[in-house]
Image (cartoon, rainbow, N blue to C red; front, side, top):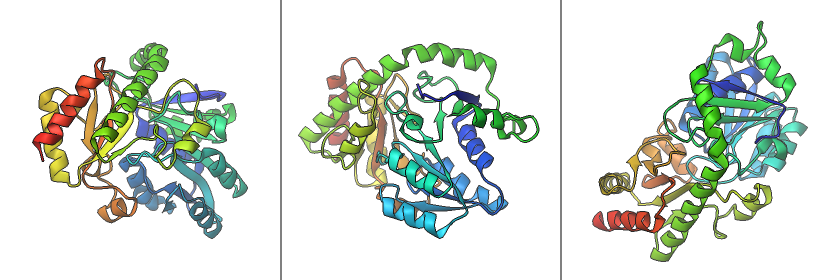
Length: 329
């Protein structure tokens, strides 16, 4: 999948992220990270790492000049961190350019590819390390918690060094039974990603027809559509993540409750399941991000993020979503 020499599995996605970050920094070092990122990752860099005198500058990763400026202002930067498709605004990181900038500054580029396995291979695009929450698409059945770190043999071996390896000494171990189960499910990942993408593309087109304020990188009007096309692995589509903006958190909450009652799927913070999942990101997966930063990154409080399932009749799903929205007007 990744084109890397090795990988190491962990007990959760956040364990993969925190282990990879901790392994690259020492007291006094600096990180340049995407402002728009999973809430737990944001909190770890913004709050927890300060205990070890490691500071983070959060920038808009779509603004490469801002990244360059942050790197110039902090010559002690050791890591540039981003998500390939960010959570929850679905913007796309220019991995090749970010890799060049990071390497020129003597830093490593770490990319979270949880939203887009198979679709992107960040290390083939220039990243040094790719991290995953395997809880999501890779496992696909919502019955485990796991993560993965992908990189060079030298890097992975350093992670598990018995004297100073982060993954050895902090113990983020994945249970062997879960490992075997995920390994089994990997054999259907390519098929599942195609169907998730197909369903999300169908919904995006239908949302556009009825005038919903939607966001999906698979359609040409998305600001990163061309960038996505330039980096993607052909044949897997544009991913299963899509969002609509309902304006307010209260309205989003009412709509999600109705959608769950109607059988659209489940109101849940996860993603990559065979059932469609939806959540109000500002109150869930991004709740650790302060409201002023949520506004700065352009996140509406009424944003509903969908992880499209493997629905066989996606038109029926669309009709249920539309009915739910109409009932809450």
